[in-house]
Length: 140
Length: 131
Ligand code: HEM
Ligand code: HEM
Image 1: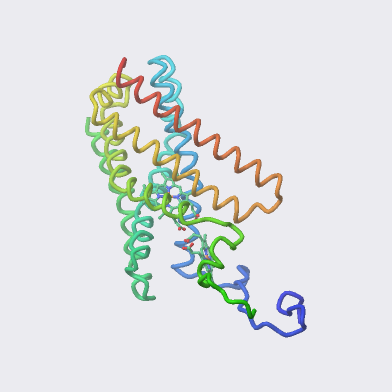
Image 2 (image 1 turned 45 degrees about the vertical axis):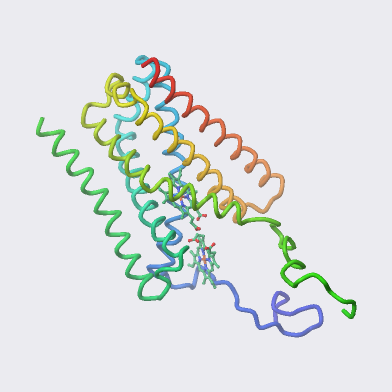
């Protein structure tokens, strides 16, 4: 018997163990949950970019050109695509969190349904904004 | 425990948890989230429209002229960096257990978000007022 599950008095406390990630089967719900955290952390870089963009804009057109040089580079566009998806995902899943906070949607069926709906919405919003944007851009 | 207890059980346990607080943190994370639902959609839409106009300096200045756009962008920046500070704080507390490293990160996070938030507010005002 391992130490962690035995109290000082030697009595075996039958506490549940936290899941070992190596053997824990991924489910839609747990994957969506950890991705909320990952998108939140990654959006920190988007926040930093927004700050730099505004600062250079305030400093004048010459400095603003630096920001635009980076944002319209290959890396910049790739980041913009990823940032937009992360924001849409985190926003949609954030709304899901807010509904849970007022006690709505806790059943297993509801969490799966709202999860699938949220994921579809996030992918759809990202796809539509880039597709329409590119279409408008290339049509003149 | 034979002495008469005049404290309710709730009063006795209040504040005894390891963190001592938390409601305020949770509440501010929700408030900033609620604020950012409409503001976030608005910012994305405005940035999208700006990109469609080439996103040059003149177009940005044009967008931020006038009180409404500037006020909303300042609100968004403030809410975002507050929300980011609260959110990353929890992530650091969850994963960084080496105390000196944890405190260094938490201090850096607080100051970084404060500085970046102030920088955004200043920039928006500067752009709105002088272009
Ligand atoms: C693959 C498995 C899991 C992963 C990746 C995971 C990850 C996370 C993450 C990132 C959070 C914070 C973000 C959020 O609230 O969505 C969280 C919160 C939490 N998790 Fe898990 N978790 C897993 C399994 C579990 C299990 C099996 C339990 C319970 C036995 C559990 C109990 C909790 C609780 C109580 C919270 C706090 C919820 C809150 O603050 O609202 N987790 N988890
Ligand atoms: C746009 C609207 C947004 C909404 C509705 C929203 C909503 C939320 C909610 C409800 C939580 C709490 C999740 C939990 O309890 O586990 C959260 C956590 C978090 N948010 Fe946001 N958020 C938004 C935007 C942002 C932005 C722009 C950033 C980054 C700059 C961000 C970074 C974070 C981080 C780092 C966390 C902590 C993640 C965790 O503990 O797992 N959020 N968000």
